[in-house]
Length: 365
Image 1: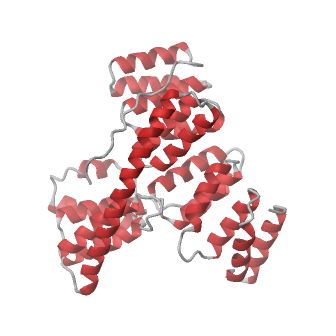
Image 2: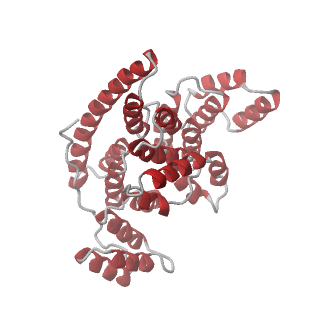
Image 3: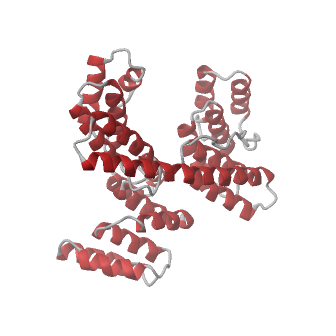
């Protein structure tokens, strides 16, 4: 769809609680943004024991440079450490909008205005975000309709490579949308079908490499990249894939376990959030991130994510168990329903007994 509302906000960093050498690097970078200046700022900001303003300066520079994925973890850290700082939270909303998390941006801005009702910048941002969300919801509806039509075409007959590629393109866009129900392995499967019907086709291989990378399907990603090397050595994506690290499958359970270790909590939660941003419809990632947010006291975020998890069709024992534990920790009465389903669907008696002990150990909801 055309007519995307504009979201163009300046960072709200104001040089508070910043060491002089970091501020000097930031001012030099803003006056002449380049990679060298950003590297110098990063070295200065992360040296010794950085102050909150040092990290905000670095995050703001990443926003200016268009490196939104690098800015967001820094701003999340600042928001967790200093939830009363409206400027950092508004900049976090900016970062979220640029990586596709506009619904999260809206929640951040609503929290800012609840605590600081006269924060004019947050009011303006929230107006823009709500307009963007209305546009986005309409756009996603169009994508779902297109996916339905294309799925019907390939289901009614063998379907040609063009139909499978078109379906893959639509699903690729939906896989990045929370609660769309489309995960990256779904996209890979469709594009593999297109590749099977018409091998070594450049647009199929480019999209397949991207989807396989996000799915963590390393062997399939490497095969697609090698296919591009063979048939399209001039592909604009090859330099990107040659410098990319190996595709790694999400391992949210390992990160959830790490989040329980005090020394590892922040890093593990940060990595879980990153996995969720990449794969918002992976039920295992969603299950683990919602538990991690609840375990670290981020109740509002945990409840919002729990609603997404509860909407997943055919939750298994682990999904119901996660919801039961999260709702129990947050004192929500919905815990009892999910606990009962988890106990009924436990794969064996040992799992059932372990879940019951952990659930009962949290006290009453």
